[in-house]
Length: 272
Image (cartoon, rainbow, N blue to C red; front, side):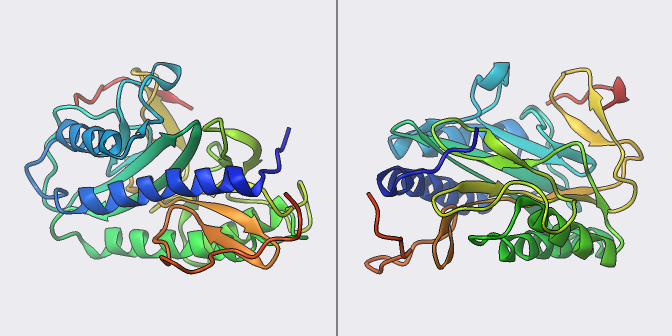
């Protein structure tokens, strides 16, 4: 069931989202060759806790990390471990934070040192695909409009769209209805209404979009080992547009107009 959040609930979701944003900004300085993904995980957990929040992903359905660290061909849910980042890697860092019972959720993909043109192309256009999807998040549109926009942009730039993984609603639960695929037809799916809070998250690949799961039962990577990128924002639907909850605030300014109402990698892989 899709829930409509009150203004008070969205204020708490904004707090949670901003902690996620701050955590991403904090980690940027450490994303360099030589650091392990577990070290990044430890830094993130300490930072989130310093903000009177806790990592949403920690022990979520048994997940062992505080953040997800997915390197190169890993699409999502990479478990932090002993892997040391290398020059030329790309890493997706997915962060969730729970503040007073409400969650923020955002993933971003980063270059480690100097990356090649293909990986740079992938990062650039996956991020742009996110914003193409966000343009369609407006009252009166439908969820299918979001996926259609992401897919259209991805195909125009010859990138693969992972179809088994989707965006989602966010609230007092980390994953809520509706599912938000990164493909679809215009004018289909649930109606977008004021008060919805949605996580839009394109997961695109440089080549084939086919994926497999490793035997850790978490890490999902591309079947052909081609690089993958992941960009995600959580947004609130307002009557006059959206507010990105996992972005920077405009301090002291009204941010939304409302209607008048109250590691060790495994060699074992299997088809997803």
